[in-house]
Amino acid sequence: MRKPLPIHIPQKFQNYDCTGCSACCRGRFGINITADDHDRIVAQGWTCQELGIPEQRLVKRQGDQYKLAHRPDGSCVFLQEDGLCRIHAKFGEPAKPFGCRMYPFRLIPAGNQIRVDMRFDCPPVASNSGRPVPAHRSDLTDLFKLVAANNVEAKAPPFFGNVTLTWPQLARVTDAFQTVLVDVSVDITRRIVACINMAALLRDPRVANLPDAEFGEYLDELVASVQEVAINDPIVRRAPHSLQHLALRHIIGIYGRIVRVIDKPKPAQLLVTSLRMLGGNGNLPPLRDELAKVTFAQTEQSMGVPSGDAALAIERYLHMHLISMGFFGRAFYGRSYLDGLNALLLTYPILCWFARAEAISSELTTLTKESAERAMLIVDHQHGSAPTLNNANVRALTNFLCDRASLRAIAIWYGS
Image (cartoon, rainbow, N blue to C red; front, side):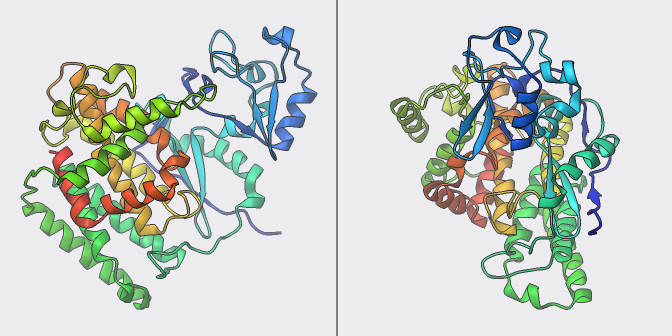
């Protein structure tokens, strides 16, 4: 019998405990359930009268998949008035659908280990509330056993283009980026720019041919080099050129959308919103109610480099997604390592943009921990999950923005 893969759990910096806010049960997700989940729910014998809903199916079938049904307001049919899960209350946590039990955790197969990632569209994750993540090891181990058959060792995705590295090499590269990201001797914007620089330097096919010892030495020298540059990097704030602005505003519009599972797409409304985002004039379109009175011009004004608790919150977000290695391969639209990493780094200016808008709407002049956390809730709901972010046109825009010159320019503009 194949031994279970070890689980790599992040230490110290991320906390979580469910607070029963039920945000995940109120229509922001279409909850896929397995055939076993379906059979178990049917066997539980629920009736519409017991649930207090009109006569309807409790589970919907869409093609080869099953989904939990929702009420007219978008909430899950099993959500009680007190915000708790009726299945959990009656039969215990193990009786809930697997997807509900897993959220907000993600298990990422990475060669001979499983790494743990988390979704920051969960309010307690964004606010870092609860126990340290390692305290959940027992629960994560139990969840992993349910999917162990699907987590066989997979071939490592490309490093970039047709260049490949082994899983241990990708882990060493990840550790190198982690070293740069958490280097508190410089501010967070300089650290992001240093990561952008290092990603560009790593796009060298010769990297894959280095012997193991030389590979490690090369990474150490590269980290030292980009850190030295970061110390004296002037990060001069210059407005991105018009094409960069257009592309970024289009991407921001996608990240900012709120679409509940019961909402029917309104092409005309989406088109108007997209055109207003591209225009970049006047008030922001109603991506979400709390940003309605913020103007585009206000989001372009400097609010300084994120510092204090705001910087720590953004660093925690990026750190978690980095060390989980869930930013590329099967976990992220099949992208290569460096393409996925640059897409993750692109979330920095996007997070800063939304955090600015949140701060401005609260009549603040600097980013705060709260505005950064609200930005995480917005951005991470779409990042790696929204199908729109993976269509050909949007991928092309993302690749354009992830060019070193473009990514550096917008990271500095919105991060300072």
